[in-house]
Length: 486
Ligand code: BG6
Image (cartoon, rainbow, N blue to C red; front, side, top):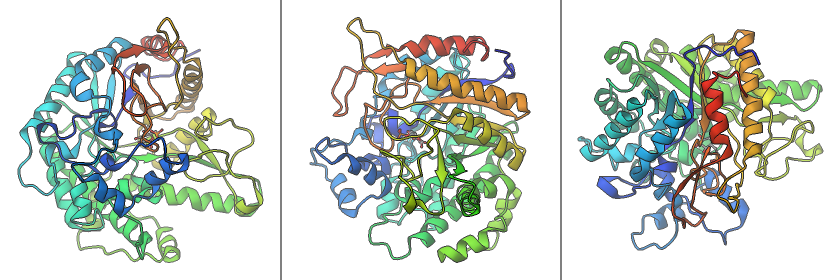
């Protein structure tokens, strides 16, 4: 295949602190919002994802009980806290040029409102970045990936409270200053548009019994826009060649039919998602916001100076996760809904297969997505997440034949190549969960994405031994050939 990948393309992998690190309570780390998700195999399967969408007050209270015997998988992760040297060495062996990761806010400011940072937490990331740089791996760092301090939720009510802007900015400035010589690529918020689907983990709202949830969600998002703009400004002043990006979950939406109602509904649905990158990439609230807020009953409280700071500090690049597409219908009641767990409740597209978790697989949709985003923003794009969650089996001889994952990734990388040929500017691709990690939405270990298997089960048992899968050697060749050998 003729490769259109630029020669300095950032091939790599991605993880998030709350899903890999473990080391809960060690060296001063505090509890984050993600540390509250349970895994309990006796729970009905639907509840595994329900808790992701809607956290309850009772669960948050129980999770803070020091005598609890329940299993909270994200407190254990895959113990990257103690294995990071081995893991990064394996990434280097595959030839990674970039590693997208996040800094756990609770390792630096355990409760979130402290004045002074925790030195042990800062020292940990110094060691992680040094290890990456030793192998020539560029860290791409998310400042907030579903891991705000739990204390800011229980004591301050999360992001709808304007004070949280100051806490985040203090955290962000602390780490940007500390790692200014080591990190050039920064992402202010992971999947900032997902507040629509899971407000607890995104902006720290416990939705249960809340009288006006839409108002709270968008007020929280507004505060994140302001915080992101302040941090973008700071980063640009401190690190002249820094690149700061926004990050959204991009689920390509297509009309279920050519019924004009389906087409219009698709435009509206797409806007409720792209609204977030519209604000961050263009620097202002788009005209359609007025009607959108009117229909949702939202009246934002905007302080003097907010719109100016947003306008003056748009992001340098747009990054996104891409796993699936979804069809949109104005009349979903007439259709058979998606089988399984199509996570955002979309309509099944009859032309596409789905993963075991109901995520609809659409490689060509990635080319469309890249073209749409580039047409819309004319800014460099970074594919921050893409991959297949699947159950892997270790053969008797210890090998793992994850050919289904290779197929998935190959088909998606082919489409990135097509988009590059179309003229889209894409500068990096970090495969999600490059090493097996705890699933964000279901808290399972058995929903695996990695090139590297981790011997650990859903209950947290196992040796944590790292084993290369078939996809490990395959991805190594992809990187070595700069996308020519797929
Ligand atoms: C993205 C998140 O939405 O999807 C990741 O940024 C997450 O944190 C990934 O892990 C895959 O989702 P899941 O639920 O399969 O882990």
